[in-house]
Image 1 (spheres, rainbow, N blue to C red):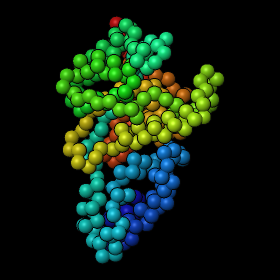
Image 2 (tube, rainbow, N blue to C red; image 1 turned 45 degrees about the horizontal axis):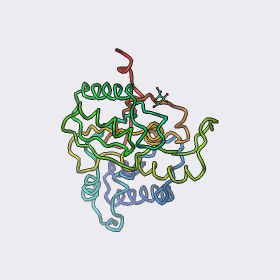
Image 3 (cartoon, protein in one colour; image 1 turned 30 degrees about the vertical axis):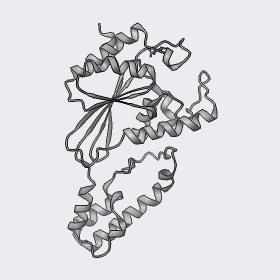
Image 4 (spheres, rainbow, N blue to C red; image 1 turned 180 degrees about the vertical axis):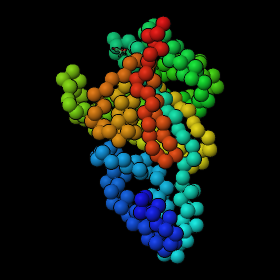
Length: 273
Ligand SMILES: *[C@@H]1O[C@H](CO)[C@@H](O)[C@H](O)[C@H]1NC(C)=O
C-alpha cells in the first residue's frame, strides 16, 4: 500500500502500475495459506490492512492491469472496491439462563435473565441509533434474549444464524483446568466460529452508502474470539477476558478497515437501579 501511494503521488502511470503489481504480489504471498484454510492467521503485532480481504488493492483484477494501464484508470478500479460507510457492530451476550436444562430448548432464560434482556433492550434504544438489523445465534437463550430486546427496537429486521452458536473457538492460552473441551470440539467449532467472524465482521461493502448500526446477539466465547480477531490480538487470548450476561461490546469498522473496540462487556445499566 505504501509503495502504491508513493507511486501514485509521484504520478508516473507506468511506475504506479509496477508498484501496484509489487504491492499485490507481496500481499498475495503473505496471505495465501490463510485464505485457503479456516484457521486464524498468525498475529505479528503489525496491523494487517487486508485482514478482511477487502483492501481495494487486493481486489483489482491483475490480469487486466499491465504497463499501459493509466493512473486514472487504476484509481477508478480501486475506487470501485473502496468502502464508503462505517459499520457499528454491537455484540450482545445473551442474558442469564437455566444451566440445569439438559437440552438447548430447556436452557431458557431465568426471570433475572428476562429482566436483564429488558434492560439491555432499553439501553440499546436509549442510544438513539438507527439500527439496521439484528442477527442472533439460533440457540434458545440467544433467541429469547433477542425477542425481548427487539421489543425496544421496533421495525428492526431479525435473522438467525447457526454460525453464531456457542462453542470452543480455539484452545485458550494459558490453559484453564475448569474447562477442557475435546480436541475434536475445537476442530469442529473453531472453523465454524472463524467462519462467523469472516461473515459478520469486516469493513462495509462498497455498495453500502450509509453507516450501519448492527446488533449481534450471541455468546461469550464467540464474542471474545471475534473481538480478538477484529483487533488482531492472538485469538488464543480469548479466555483472558470475561463478559457479563446481557452486556454490550461495541466494535467500529471504518471504511479503511481500521477497527476500534469502543466498549467491552459494558453492563453498568444493569446494576444502576
Ligand atoms: C451469567 O449467567 C450464568 C447462568 O446463566 C451464570 O452461571 C454466570 O455466572 C453469569 N455470569 C455473570 C458474569 O454474571
